[in-house]
Length: 150
Image (cartoon, rainbow, N blue to C red; front, side, top):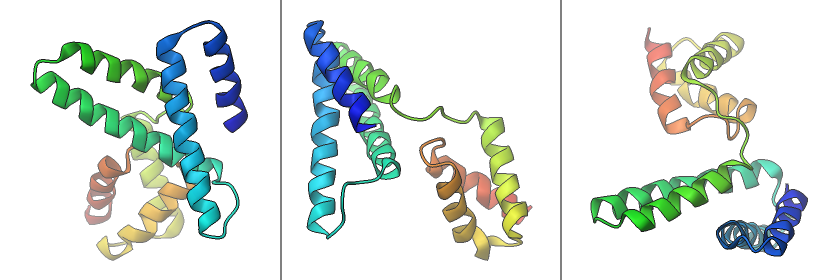
């Protein structure tokens, strides 16, 4: 993932695509910060799974910023945030549709034999292992809860 982002940054810089270059520099800086933090904790480089989590967090931050900008009448800034979201999402795995997410949740519940709300943590942990970066886990938790109580 690092190599792809680095190569795309070089390409965008040579093409003089300011918006893409800026977004890729932000991604690259965030990855370097994560790697520095990982080294400080005695680990090597951050894994691709950790980088996917980082990119998902960046998207979430930009969605919140875009909403704030829109609420305050700053449509041009909201549009800039959305453009950055599109660039960041290109490096994330394909998101599961609502139906696919429900099927994945049902499969995990069946696979681990979860049979009550007390198993919610186990189900969520397994979902995060199997589908990292592919679903919004804040929304998935409501579906898991509904699946376990049904």
